[in-house]
Image 1 (tube, rainbow, N blue to C red):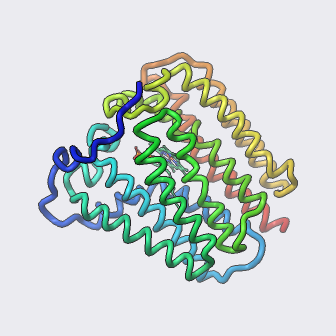
Image 2 (cartoon, protein in one colour):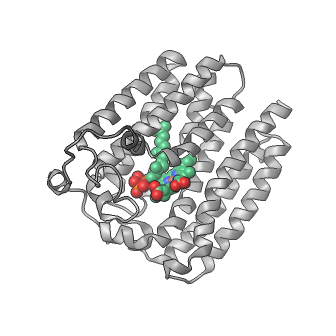
Length: 311
Ligand code: HEM
Ligand SMILES: CC(C)=CCC/C(C)=C/CC/C(C)=C/COP(=O)(O)OP(=O)(O)O
């Protein structure tokens, strides 16, 4: 099924109109804070793993800029998708579809924070890091949200690149360049994203179908999605071990990455070979989704421990 792109003219008419100014909690919700914890963590690890020194105040400012930029991108994503968020159980209570905030405020908030974060990053660290930061916001909002998400089931494979940039930005904030290790970290998150998201998409498939979003389980079915989860996990495993094979990291990363990737692969294998379409019985899929998040925390954490112990 190919869904048509979002009809922007119908959005304003279909949204409840906010009559009172939004609460600060609603502005916070626009930034998707829970998802962003891992975005910020991977950025921090990229920064801490980079060679060279950075003043703690500058390091803090760089991470703040990445957090603010990610939040701004989340706000712009919700500004653009207010109508489809209103059609999905998982997202219907967000500030815009629930009518607690007007779309104009979300747009101003997102654009303002985007400019603020990029300019501050450029002034505090370097303009190379600021340019990648700006590129990540544009990639998530324009390439993923507006272009790919409503059009193709490959949306998250290509669009997922946006979420792979944070460790590269953290690294570039220190060094002003990008070398093999940050590229390997980018690849790891890039190939991690399909199993992360499709495990979840399997058990919220109906939400996406109702909203007309062409996510893989809706378009190609569950069997194909399960096969793709397993396929991308295999590539992710190669990406996870690449820093070890290239001798870019030490024994802590090597051990943690090997063990965690083996667990991830075992879970993905199980999900890949199951035939179950009742969301209520999709415990292995839910477990894989949850573990995918823990996985990145552990592997990126190990990278930093490694660099500190054996640098
Ligand atoms: C295009 C790529 C991605 C898609 C489509 C995606 C999608 C999702 C969705 C739909 C959820 C459910 C959370 C909710 O209900 O709002 C989720 C949760 C989460 N995602 Fe992703 N994700 C992507 C990439 C990433 C990246 C790159 C990271 C971080 C590195 C990340 C970290 C998380 C975390 C930490 C949660 C759990 C949030 C919670 O506790 O509720 N995701 N993701
Ligand atoms: C520095 C910077 C700009 C980083 C950006 C990080 C980034 C793009 C993370 C992507 C994670 C995310 C919230 C995906 C949700 O996709 P979705 O919008 O399809 O999910 P939804 O259905 O919950 O809205």
